[in-house]
Image (cartoon, rainbow over all chains, first blue to last red; front, side, top):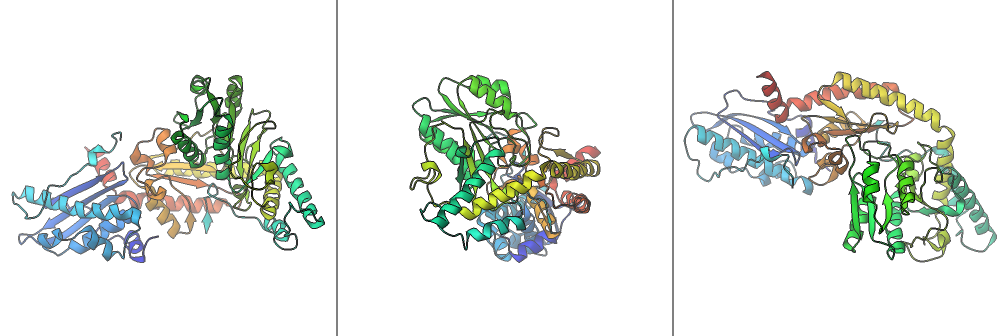
Length: 143
Length: 391
């Protein structure tokens, strides 16, 4: 059901870990749905993403999309990173099964959440970036 | 390959294949026809029916072959509902029934039937008092499985049956996981209807039976010819029935020693995992449990990742996580025993068979330790937990 690329990124995930004193950190998803993604960004003074790390609680697709998303934004400017959509991530992975498309949405949201955190910390506005909806703490509420 | 998913299906034994082959080729005739070859096949099938009936202390006329365990479950629920709807439209089931039961009662709900879903405790056991209090004047059927497919919990079916009969309502049990493992006596255990499936006991897929107590009215689900005493149409599947019989013969011959051997492996697996992996729990009752079943929840990680990593090592297992169910919700069984969603997502079911060895179990344990710690090292939930603990 998974493409070779998805399996490769699941088996050998790139950029797993944390960044201490990161320029921006974003966590999205919730445990109820079974996916939580956290992205750490290290952004230099020219607004270039020098380094990126992730941690993900989730299925194979969630881990693979996190890994691919970090690869796609590493070394890019924050505006280039903002242009990465779930479609870009999915295409880079040679597609995902229909039930796993929400995983790629999470990767896009995690990048946005980390950029939002960076903007907030530096008191700047990144044009086109909306405040992320983080529902990580709503995990155990009843439907 | 290390196959630890025997609750999903089992390997068909060579003897079973050999028993089936003649009924595809030289004994291909329709057993319902009048000529000599057909009559001979019909006699073989009658022998099979008698043998299978005796395994649950039933009469051959009480055994109705079906195309699967799911069909047997569907038929029991819908067939009794249709036959008894004049008496009442209330049915009671447990919250941890197989989807074949759950979806069948949902269909009936849409048709105006009322369903009561019995809670289970943290071990997955039905509460007898709650059952008795739930039975009403218009209750026509109670369905509680003999043993659960995900967590292996064995329900007190004899007591459940007694309560049903005391209140004049019928008792069905889905024995798909229990048949050939536990001793079942439909008379002693107060059972009116019981579902089984051949492929869980090294038989072929596509065949099961529904036991229906003599004299009980049940409407057919599949209409057509006069097969199965006019209750289940469709040309009799001679080969699969003969395969089912052979599989049951082999299973019942060695049942007790197989159970003992499998239980030894299961306990070894449980002991090692509980000793070597932190933040893990066993789902389901430890005592009232099918010998082959083990179900763990590993905190901070999700089940599908575990399955993929086990698969990469040639280990076949299953999980109750949402990602393996095709929906966003984890297993209804794990939620019913009270697991929070996050922990239910991290479940792993290993179901052992007679072909597994101690070396295989050790190999699985060795690798589970590594896989769990690898997945935790990339889990934000584990990171948060460690930071919180460190404070």
